[in-house]
Structure formats: C-alpha cells, structure tokens
Amino acid sequence: MAKGEKMHKTQHFFFNVVKLHRLWTKEFGKRLSGIGMTHGLAAVLLHLELLGEGSTQREIAESMEIEQPTLVALVERLEELALLTRRPYPGDRRKHVLMLTPKGRKLLSQIADIYESTYQALFSCIDGEQMNQIEQLLARIYSASKS
Image 1: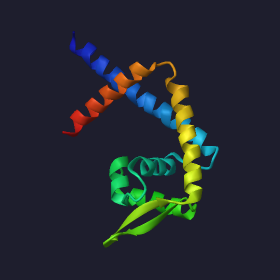
Image 2: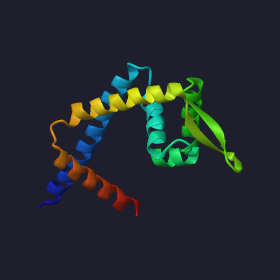
Image 3: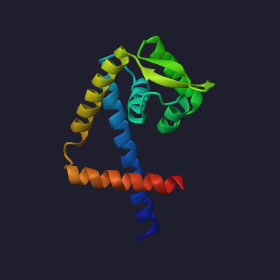
C-alpha cells in the first residue's frame, strides 16, 4: 500500500469518528433542548448516575474528562436549577459530594429516555452483537491510548 493510500485510510477513519461524534452531539443536544437542558448539564447528571450519588466533584470531573473549573460552573448551574446539591464530604470540608434533588431525579429519568431514543435512532442499523464488538474495540483503543 502506497503512503498516500495509508494516509487516506487513516484520515477516513478519524474523519468518520469525528463526524459520528458531531452527529451524536447535535442530535442529542437538539432533543435535550426540548426539556431545557444542554449536553454539558445532562452529562453531569448522567455521570453522577453512573458513578453514584455521593460522588465527589473530582470523581465526576475525571469521569467526564473535564477540568475542575468547568465542572464547578456546570454544578453551580445545576444547583441554580434545583437539580442537585453539593454537600461537604464526610471528614474533609474542602471536598464536596453531589446529590440529586427529587426534581433532578425526575429530570434524569427524562434525560435517560432521550439518551436511549437518540441511541436507537442513530444505531438501530447495527445489531446487538455488532455493537458489542464496536464497544469492545473502542474501549481497547481508548485503554491503549491512555497507557
């Protein structure tokens, strides 16, 4: 394979990954706007659900792979919307844990439904086994890139 062909295949792969990410983000964001949410705010709630209530802000920021100040701004907005609260970490007042409010739990359920419907709309052309393989490959690529 000539150098130009190899470069083209590599570019094609990355361009497709980027295009798919943009498509997902655009569609998910459009659906979230119907309930007054943004992708960033919804992501905090989804990561809190994934890691569990009582997770620290640092744990959420690491899970989302964002900087601490970015997360603080999102958390402050979620607090303003009465969707979550920050509580002092037991034994260390410098840390805070995040807890959903009843309103936050209700909205999180709606976000999860939107997430699932977006997923189905974009990936229904792929059967379960194929999706499992894709997820395993992406996880493997990600893991290898972190080492």
